[in-house]
Length: 64
Image 1 (cartoon, helix red, strand yellow):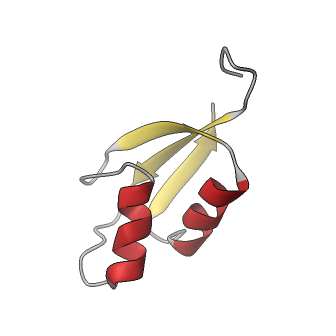
Image 2 (tube, one colour; image 1 turned 90 degrees about the horizontal axis):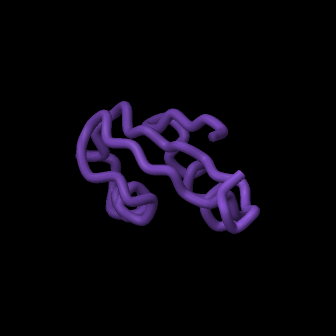
């Protein structure tokens, strides 16, 4: 857990979002991912889980 006590998730972009539509590209950008193999550690929340679920075929996620 982080210093704030919230659980974190590491999200890695493993497939290009080009050609997937504006909505999926917006989810990838909302997760903070910019290029292939880019990773971010973000706080676990229902909104983040929803974005990951939307683009599950393009990202890999793991608990930190």
